[in-house]
Image 1 (cartoon, rainbow, N blue to C red):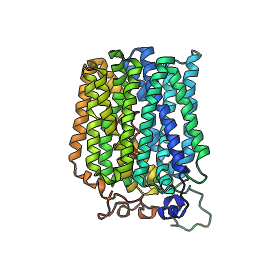
Image 2: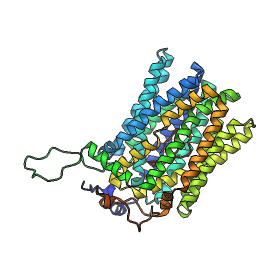
Image 3: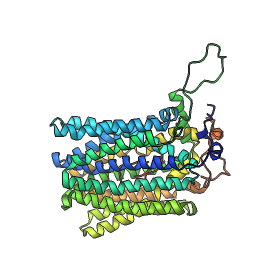
Image 4: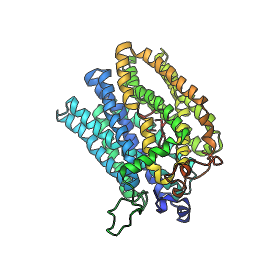
Length: 480
């Protein structure tokens, strides 16, 4: 496939344009408000289901129904985003999410919200959220180039934005649920989606977030046989998948993050709410732990944005996972004061703040701009593949064995996966392409030899998002 030549696909073309921070600010603000609403909903929705049904299994089912469409639609959205442009996809899908989220409290207030209809509304929100989140991620490297911002700093700022949402969202959600009930939190979620849609549609400069591949057009009657025509949807999809298969570092990251994201989903959607109910802390405890985790993660992300480009990626990456993973599960299984729980969540959040900036930089350094939407979509979706099952498995396991055995088993598995996978040789590639900008479209054709980085070059999520608050999220392969 012939590489397109829009300005956004070429680093040199962007370098000639005047510097503008408006795209960076616009994308980050839109991410902040929509993610904050999602985090508020992550407190309000599970608590609403627990309060009305008393069932951990049904709480896990609601999480599954939201996240399964999220992952599936996101996986298929890459070619659409590359062809239509991330800007249009972002504001339109956020608008759909706002309508669906707003209908939940409205129908509940009218007494017209049976459980099956709640599942339908939640599925619509998840299906629209996937492409919307992906589209914002895809706009980050273009915004960084226009603002003359180093890539790791831009992904670091994106990580700070996610962590701020993880800080403010649980605090607001816990407070709203405790004072006004869970429907107030879901109303706030709808308002946040609407505001995020407005920011992308109105605030970004004209011309940003455009398509990176041309739309197919009917061949003229005089077209000679053998003349290349624009690729169709499935050809674009296959090109993204073929590129990802040829990147062993990205595939290794995806497999590891898929397991940890599943465990994070179980933790956030079922285990923490059940712990809060059994410990007597209630929604305020969910909000407190989420808030302190988020504050510490913001601090870690700010440090990563400032100095991560000078630190050894591999060491920082696995140290971050060591802090942010198993300790959270173990401390909730122990009969310890809330101050100890808070302290562990602070350390966990600080470690988690370093992970997504590294993942985002690795992805953006390795993936050609014209493939970014497709590879991001596939990487995110594969790394999130287990997330819809996390709540289901956790709900069923808690119902069968109780909370404490499940917490200890999940914590042990988290430690084993993040420690043992670090022994694989692919991780040596993390620093190889360091400092290189996004791969130019002309450097990565659909031919395997051109797509694989040369041995002399050095390496860059891009997940997610995983559920709110999970440990590894970045542009393309992310942990939340």
